[in-house]
Length: 408
Image (cartoon, rainbow, N blue to C red; front, side, top):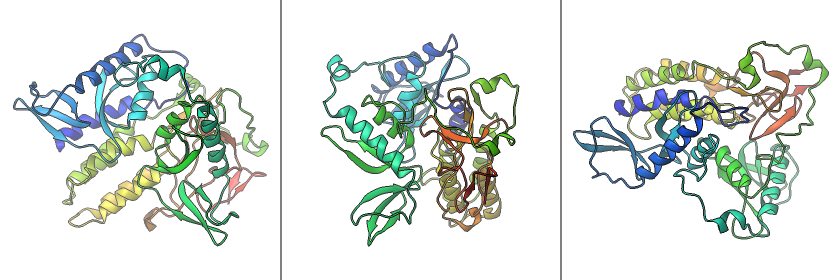
């Protein structure tokens, strides 16, 4: 297990540049994407019995593999993830880690490499011929997601109606929504159907949902709010609270160099906890995989809280001897700011989670905002940009006061 975790954590640095608008590519960017594709194509040919060189890392049948004694040792990825090669962002090269197929494909495409995970382009007929209903399905899913963003548990509804409320699946009964949480790392979304006209409502990752909608030809991410033409205007009261920065990095994004250290701090405590560190690989999954992903700018607004809840669940599990230290680490993780991306000339604040945590230790604990973000505008590439006062601009249980730009 320790050998696997050592591989994952350094890779987190490659994940810091969350997918988003990019103005220019480094000279090695395309080559990194193509190298990742070549590795993924090679991995598809491997089996657990394939010859290997000690220390070699690979992916076999979607699982992480490391060569020891001339034979691959296999370690499964967390639920919903698969082992893939990804292009590095800030230097030449690739990394091998666990990710969703949709996110991996998006990261490779962002380098300019075509042909998906392995460089094998789809047949021309698949690319150029969409069903007559495909675009309409994508736009219908966006319209539903935009509507769901306005709903609350006490919103009026029609018996039998399905929806998403605060990232949870909701069904109307007796005129009120009854909500059901999604599994960790997932949120409720509307998705376009593929083989017939219409949409579905299900639990998915934000990245996969955005990819599915984009595949229909619909632009503007999850809700159809275009990245190119923003209409959102920050309330005047928020302007006085804005902190300006002359850092040129803000032209593109605000990223944090301490994210690998944040992940490592959890992993170190977890490994010496005395608990079950094998089932679901909590020391790795909650640190260098879900933990890092939850702190990226394009993550789901509740992913950070969900990961902190999972940390505390582990801290309270049988055999753990350092519960207090693990819970303190989970709370510190929940308070950590998320990265912020420049979207059409503005760096918005990152949206807040608008549902309650599972564990009482996290009640009232929310993520901080980085210096330099616009306090009057919130958003991400997946969600679009929206003004303070909308859902997600204040933490759960608080109400935005547009006149003072405060949450009460």
